[in-house]
Length: 328
Image (tube, rainbow, N blue to C red; front, side):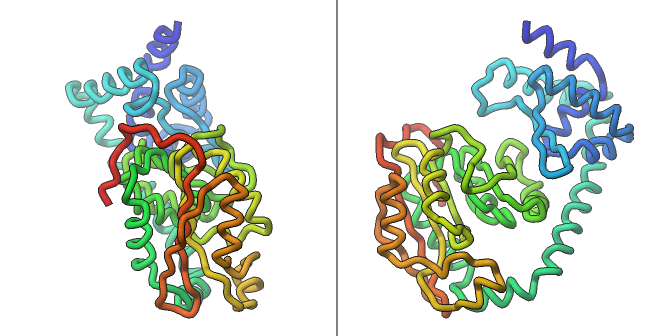
């Protein structure tokens, strides 16, 4: 019986502490060991028991293994949701357990600070080249405000942020979406995004390593897909959009923020741009071939490079009602 397995897994103080930590934020095994003051092999054994019981789940990023809670509200798992509520109640009502949890969360500040320091170092190494590129196009705050307006006419539901980079899109839409999955191929960028997003609730955003040409998700997993300044890195944009269409539910939407066609050839070598923007016709064709009905693009002036927002609707039935409304 699953409930018997769950109760056995929870029959250890360390594993109870791990579950409360994972309810606060996603953590690497080594970070858990640091917070708990235990050896990494010992913590790994506890983690294995929790994962086998379906209470936690692992995902690998390069040589690191991260853990997240596999239970809680918003999942199609009433037993898991009940267990999550039980653990929260135990912390609220059991003074001894609450004291342990409070001390553990105090140690999380060290983890957060280390992540932020790493992100700052990465930004420092690349700041000059990114600043040079920003000078060429519309201000970021203008682009973000317009994107929110474009997506404000329907609920976001489950949102996939392809090529999340620093995690800015996930941060921008965290309050409006039911959940956000932020994907990037770069381990460095995922660590930057994790530092930016680590203060959001643990069940709000999931970070995943993956390639936009082979998305690691089942078909029809998302209501909204966002590609913010990503598609120009694709040698074959049609492959990336076909994958985006595959994971978009019928009636769902895709929002592409990218450059209009331009002639700044040096961006190929300096910033690894595979495409020098997109014409209106080219993007309409790409979206149509992928199975999206393209709307008119929104052009944003304010720089030598014109930024455009293209919105497409996945052909099929409408997005189911009852998802969280977009407040922005």
